[in-house]
Image (cartoon, rainbow, N blue to C red; front, side):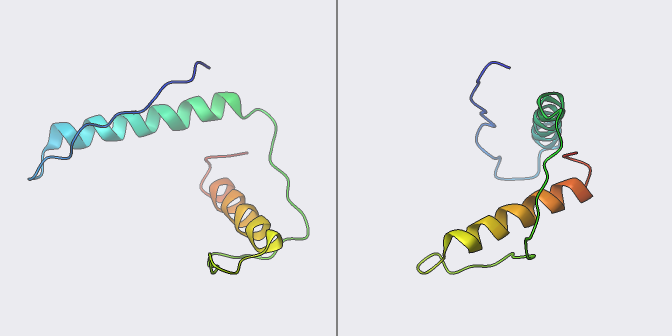
Length: 81
C-alpha cells in the first residue's frame, strides 16, 4: 500500500452533510485498507486492561498495557483480527 497523506479539509462552521459523508467515506476506506494489510492476527499476552496513564511518569509496561488494551478493543469492534 502506498503511503499517502490524509486530508479531510477544514471543518465547516455549520453541519454539512456532504462534508460528513466525505469524512465518513475516507475513514471507511482507511479501515478497509488496514484490514487488507492486517492478515496476521495481533496476539497479546500477560496484559492488564489500561486506558489511562500519567504521561509524566508512565513506564514502558504501562504503555505496553495501553497498546494491548487498544488492540483488544479494536479486535472486539472487528477492526483487527
